[in-house]
Structure formats: structure tokens, C-alpha cells
Image 1 (cartoon, one colour):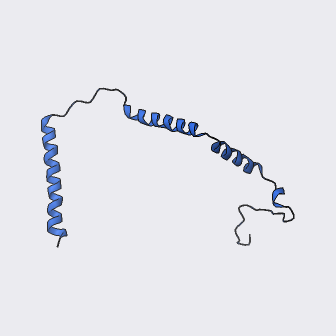
Image 2 (tube, one colour):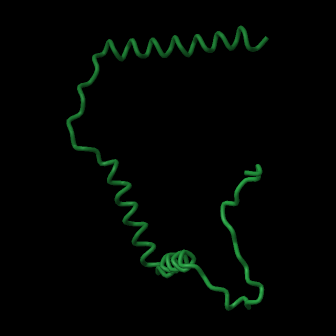
Length: 101
């Protein structure tokens, strides 16, 4: 090897052909067909697909219809409140005393 990178693809152009005589490869034709299929949809089909998608999306939030878990006891709510209050107060004190100066 001479150290030059090998080309990934090569495009051969015949400049003697007119532009309407250039041949399309099968991949290009297949890509054009799939694009045409997507653009041939009517507005009604697009709206129906949107509603179908919305139904599936909203149905995800309906849950699995299981029983709710047991409620926590009052002392767990109390300690959770105290812990969150102390944490927020600690952040406020640190901010007021150290970061404002």
C-alpha cells in the first residue's frame, strides 16, 4: 500500500449521455417507490394513524389494574417530612453563609 486511503465508493459518469438518459440503479428506484408510497397517503389515512397512535399511547397509562400498595404509617410520613425539611434548611444555610460572600 502507498499510504493513501482506499475510496469507499466510485461514481462513474458518462458525460456523453443526456440527463434524461442516465440509468438509475435498483436501489434508487426502490427508494423512490418507498418515498412515493409515503407521499400517496391521504389526509384521512394520516389522521386515522394519528388517532390510532394516540389510543395506544393513552392506553399505556391505564395501568395493570392491580391493587394499590398499602399506605405508609403516620410515623413514616412524619420522618419523611422532617428529613426533607432539614435537608432544604441545610442547603439554605450553606447558601446563605458560604456562597453569598
